[in-house]
Length: 327
Image (cartoon, rainbow, N blue to C red):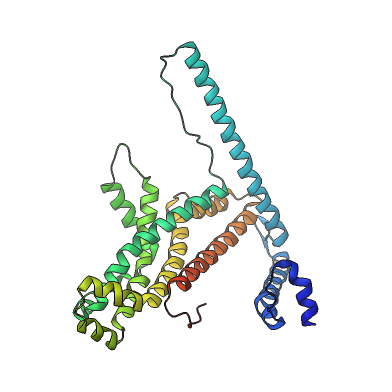
């Protein structure tokens, strides 16, 4: 049976030594879970009626996802037509008067669902990298010094559980007061979301880095002392490689929190992104709103899953201990 299954699945590119047990574990079991979920979802949706109609099942959500893609394609066609008209008008203007001043205007069409996905991804990655740039060095310094760890641990524990909904009003007011420019490099909404995401997601990386650094083997520290390594060399050669597993554990947790925080922040502050898309559809209240919101929910979950897999792959790549099973 195993050989027959392998022959059938060979066109899919599976390795020759791939046995049936591995096949069931890695393909059949997850697929079964998804099918059970779709079945329960479909049955449950048929029995839930809201003020906007029946709760969308898998089929309705699939149709709405196609509609959202079609809307995006139509908007891109409008954008291309807009720039073509602008180019023709400017060419005629220059033909009539070679010294004429040419003005170009950006296309200001409504952002589509896919545009909002791009906006949210850029914002979450910017906030995550900003938080990591603060959390990893700070975690290393705090982890290497017990006095600093004792001094800052109460502050970390105080701010760690604070919700993004509590930070957002403060961040919005501070950004509005300090980020004042006639020609700003970034939109205020982007800066507000970036700072809110950074404030909420830096704590797991900071704590895990500090714990990883503080638990480095005494033998490794003694070797560093015997070799009289300078502080920076000690950090690069001993501390960071030893703490890599814990640092990446913190980074994966931080990225997941950053993604959740961003959606909530965009929804509350009406900043561009997937959160705003969900809130706008909720306020719209059309018969297709629930289906479109459900598409956004699935996409948010899928993106969160992909981000975690990317971090896991990166962790496997840089981890020195290849014998540890990471999942």
